[in-house]
Amino acid sequence: MGRNLYENFNLAKNIFARADDILQTDLSSIIFNGPEERLNQTKICQPAILTVSITAYEVLAAEYGIAPAILAGHSLGEYSGLVAAGALSFEDGLQLVEKRANFMSEASQKHPGRMLAVLGLPLEKIKEICKEVQPVGLVAIANINSPEQIVVSGEIEGIKKFEEYAIKSGVKKLIPLRVSGPFHTVFMESAAKKLNAELERIEIKRAKISLLANSNAKEIREPEEIKNVLFTQMTHPVLWLEIVKEIKKRNIETFLEIGPKKVLTKLLRRIDPNLLATNVEDKESLKRSKEIICV
Image 1 (cartoon, rainbow, N blue to C red):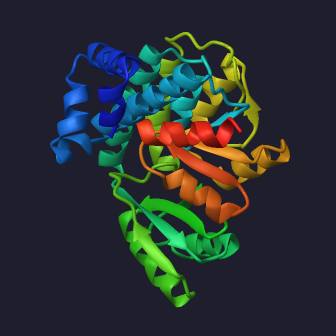
Image 2 (cartoon, one colour):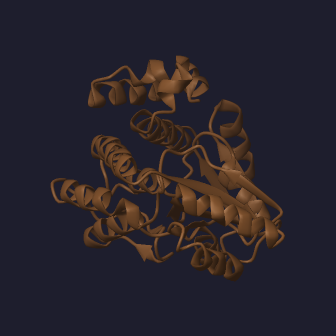
């Protein structure tokens, strides 16, 4: 991911070089060359995704002058959104997500768990199953991604029991996520407290562009609001479906997903097939986005 941008734009080379310097590691080489096991480590993966996302955003702005009306980011993407909005510097954003990853990893070692994407069960039924499995292990909703896709997170035995109940309830599909812990639950409380201490040490500016927060789908710009939502995000579900609904209320119907892969683009099309959604991750997709926006 990101190699195509790096090879085609000097601005991209500069951003990758800055990331290597900020983190004092050869992040660029790991992103481009692996090994995959190291790239998939949370403490590498999170800064890598932020770096590629900001690179795509900056190249899009520099090459075509495209600027968003509003921003939103899914979980880790909230940090990329805040960097893009000017609320966090690139340096602070990178260092924060690296520390966030370490804090999450530490919390996961204390509280081992799993995350599971649930397809084709109503939200109320999923809440009901979460309550039913509680004697075995705590399971909670972690992401409400679309009407058809909801992610649960929790203790290993609780997730196993949840799978049994979900199958009996007629679930369409269950997809275990490749993550190392029960994220967006109370098990991340220790990580949230450590992150909060880091947030107090850095400068957070008023966002130049409004961002819709993961934990409440409300528009935020002020530094204290930003600190609060980054803290709350760690232990609360990502309300992605609500965020998309809020953006639609503003009569915005064109969405650009900035960064590697097309996960959110696919989700948007499931939420509303009438929305125009595309991703930006390389030279070709940059051109496609220009054609879509600059009509």
